[in-house]
Length: 617
Picture 1 (tube, rainbow, N blue to C red):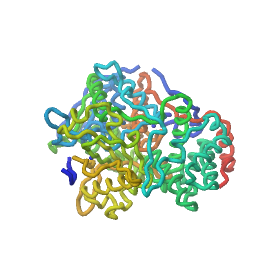
Picture 2: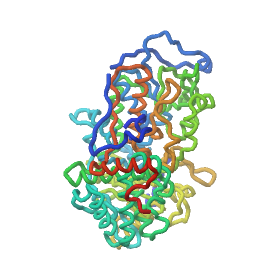
Picture 3: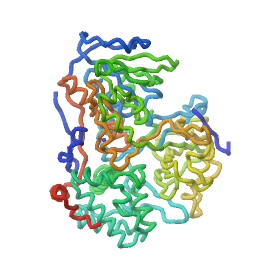
Picture 4: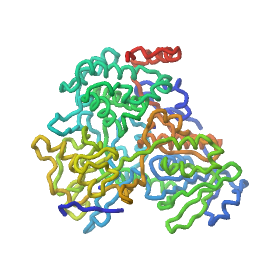
């Protein structure tokens, strides 16, 4: 890991996803799937050298229950968890550290006098109340000595708490939907919701009335669209085109198109499918309605570094369940024997390669790594894996700034609406109940700022270069400049010069040949990409997939999607094994019950070739 100092001194099961007819869901409709108990037991191990590739596995041993989980991100850990609970012998490999992109990245050399190194991460660890799979997993992980679970380590905060600072003395806040309270009962009919949305969109007079009415109509169009239309029509239309941003004002473009995608997820409005963005928007609307009627708050953040608050207790629990972990062991390819996976080639930390044999294989490595593993032989056995070549990966990486003064940046979570690099940040001490200086660093650092950089292709305001073409030091300076432009623009100094003592850019970013390279890019949604996503169950009988590129409810690079993919892979494995074990619980996507009749009507209209009833574009 490379460290830097400042100048002053870092988601319904897959099978159901493919059938849109079964996807019409109701608000707070709960979990899917239960059935049956498992048996299975066998031996497994490392076989050194290439000779192992030529030796088929014995099939006359004990019952088959050994599993190699390849990749220790959220999808891989979820699969290991569900399998271990069902009596399988699980071994987990990862080329780096356990936790994948969710892991905490300590800044080396910064701990002193018994303090821990400063805690860096890939970016903000945000959760929403419409995530179900991740929450269920957290509730099943005890925090030793507390009588609580990891779920209790989530700090909820209101939909009104995130702040949306903008530069050039423009008013902060997000006039589209957040920070605007209304009678939730008004949103239970299309007419009532449209009236509410027009008021929301016109808040601060930032969008003209005709554009506010148009945008409200587009929201209603999507919310009343059937699953058939969402997959058949909106999957193939970008969010930018769906909201008609290209022919409308700059204010509309910034807020209704760019701002809305930024608020929901780090996605690019020009290429993200309307189906994906619309589903996320629907989830936020439902979460907002729940909060306004006394339900859980929309947002949540962990109350400490991800490793401390979540991953360490999880991994510790899995070890007690018999799961074996091998960090620093990279999957280098598969051995194919008799149209099955006969072994996983593992590159050890010393550079040597060995073949690990198991009965079942769960591949949970990221998109870019996975498709490099699909040999011609594997692609011939399952052509769907070859379609993964069309999936798009992009950059979204974190920077950490560690400061000598406690930060007071609103409620702690900020989305910088007009920052060219699509910055979001959260202030660690706003959510971590800890004596920062006593626990981390050298005693002089009292707070940390975790920043996501989501756009690496737009020139910045300081050097006029994209993040991909800035040095590490320039990325730090540019990020600081974009944040201060938004936070200090009204004369109030919210970020003071000279307070940053240490900083860390995600170590996955490396500089060579005049540009940056990214060792851990992120899968991003694009128009029509659903067809290129594989299912968790491949056509290779003992190979399953458990990463965020698998078809899930929320087909974005999210911890929720990865957790759902891990569960779906386990269920497919149980089916292939003929196991009677209870299936991993899968949750359906929520929807607004009052709109259900209109969605049923829209299904008939779509099949008849007619537009949505509210689609006047």
